[in-house]
Image 1 (cartoon, rainbow, N blue to C red):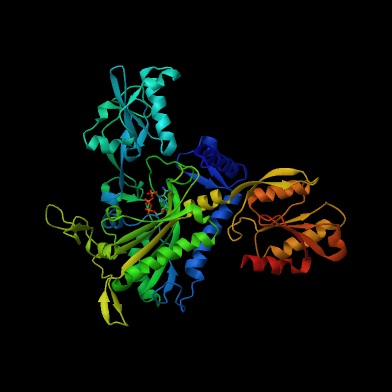
Image 2: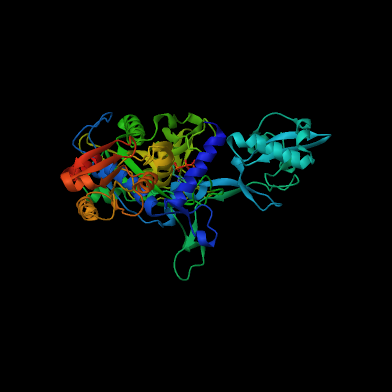
Length: 548
Ligand code: ATP
């Protein structure tokens, strides 16, 4: 599928998401707020199902007596729900206060702001005039964008475009400026008419700041909205150990909101400023940590496949050593080929990181830095820790090996919104179905895995008379305690099927004349379109089995 078609596919998904109440722009009646999204009636159910599937598969349904495939041993799983605002020292010791930033660049002319690492460009020359044309587009759109901008800048007609001399392909603006090949004064900003309007890049911390208390004013009142849920788990490590009977190896899971003041939120919900994460911090013996890392990487990869994401659109990417964070021993990303990306490009759904003992040590000793290959407490000019830790002992005494150690951590960190977006994009299909007269009719169908589908079954009386609604309502009431289902008696049955297909409902149950005679209903399968007769009395068990 070429980029053009894929972009139009994305446009259709965004429009269906709005039309059918999956996702709306936040505060839309006031013009919306960039980077913030609301989930509508179908969307909230979809996202909740994603989070519930994760919690059930990773935590509540976990068998702690079994050795799962690929795991070095049995292990325990437990959960937490921590606050969004935490003690500011948490972020100082974790490194977010000093390091969680992107470089941004402003355009004095257009007043637009860009992420420095998102800008690319190339030299263009025409009749002695030369300029470094930049774009903030990515993938296949970037080169045509630079051509259009150069044409405008040189004041050329379309047929004169070939007269432009190009000095090579697209390169990162950041890289060419660092190498001295171009300067910001030469650069034509992505939305500017003349070069030289881009400001020097500035660091921008992505944490949202707030103030605590009515008399807030001085620096001590500064607090931050968490940019990840993980730190709440680390600072409660001892509480969990002391109050539950878990022993290493074990994991603590948390689902909750995180906030990042992204410079350029984009691609629908993919890069939002407020989003939800589903994170596990898995604590293990240092000697076993490489094996646990591989276990979690493979387990999490399989989870997406089991919930129906197309294997060919998923990619597991191990980070190269120069890409690893300063504390990480190994990291892999699970990525998905979102339709808004150029062919061959993938976007991160989840990162699985081996974090060693970095986090627990940071919260004990203070912010750590790597020096000569060792993690040591970073000191200020006075020789004291730059950011002092809690001083609490977060080591663990292992009853089996009779040793004391600081556990190593494996962190599978997933985005609930990005996961939901991937399931939404993957589910989108267009095909043809025969209408009531047997003529082919095109349909849009969301092929969600039944566990994720917002509505599992629709109960449809063929007509609003002859006792059909009564049987249908009884069936609705019998099913409702077991799964999300809808009763719909409005309109032609073909239209009602179409509505359910767009909502991604896997099964429709139609009550017709035959039902009254032999107490069977038609069960229509969303994907195969096969219609079969099922005794009314067996519907609940049958659908429960299908969902199990
Ligand atoms: P990216 O490089 O795409 O910004 P990241 O590597 O900073 O992501 P992590 O810090 O590893 O992301 O966060 C873990 C997960 O949280 C990501 O895999 C993603 O699913 C989700 N996530 C992170 N930032 C955002 C965001 N701005 N909007 C939506 N989800 C996000």
